[in-house]
Image (cartoon, rainbow, N blue to C red):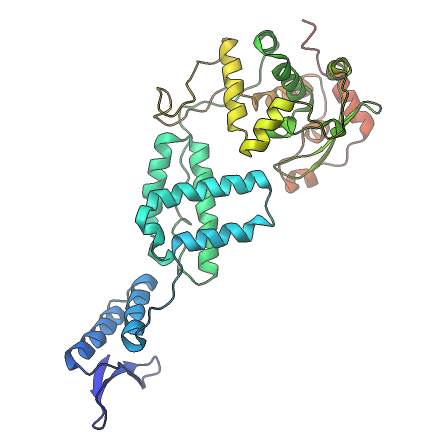
Length: 381
């Protein structure tokens, strides 16, 4: 039990604290007013008796520290911690991922408002749940879950550094997918419809998507240094997994590349407009929206405004069955339908994880080229 004891020769009271071993510890309150000293003792007693949380105890200790020393106990606010976390991540994270981290944490700070300048330990699971609910009204389930995952990383670091006793985002469940949509591969007639309405650069990117199976960011970031026409291969490092890829050029893509008649420096982008957009935004959402418009022109998707204030952007996004990523599924489907073994398909497209890579044995270049040659020519129908 906490109490106040006053030495006969002292003007200030001392806070008497019970230790875990049953002894007593005295600390000066530097308070001459007996009532104020008793209030300090009562605050500590309440915290101990009710077994308050780390946050509550820390608040009491802050008050005690200020009463005793006249100085505020230094704390780290949510805003400061996020700034420190981003700075720590900068040297070990790809630029596109850092852009997402910055955008995601800014969303959370905006959600908190003035509370962003309060200490980290004051954020609760209820706060994260409320934030998740707001995200889910304007973002797809996938995007909502990615933002919560980012927040989980932020508070994991805060806990490791002793800034909070628990991670308030740790046990916040993922949002379930809405609408029942699953991405599917394109059919050849659908691909032909896309090629008819797309401009030359998008036509080229679609062909790269079909015959390499790579993601939009990797195709937009290709330079002519990645293209080896002599040996008929494309070499690149994927943005998502940092996997080094060596992809044989399928005959339809080879004819397309030979017809482009490139003249310039090796670091010149293969798709200049897309590369400029990617480098400016550090993300593919703008390009994804552009391709969605191409699909709408081809009659494969409903036309949706991409302006936040207009109709179609106020509610949560619905995952579309067809998108640029569907070209990756299309490549897998074409290869499987051509009888290509799963190991070769995975090597052609690229594994999403180290575990998947270890599951398959090494695939030779001959098998890879045979797989590329087996893919149908969507330009000849």
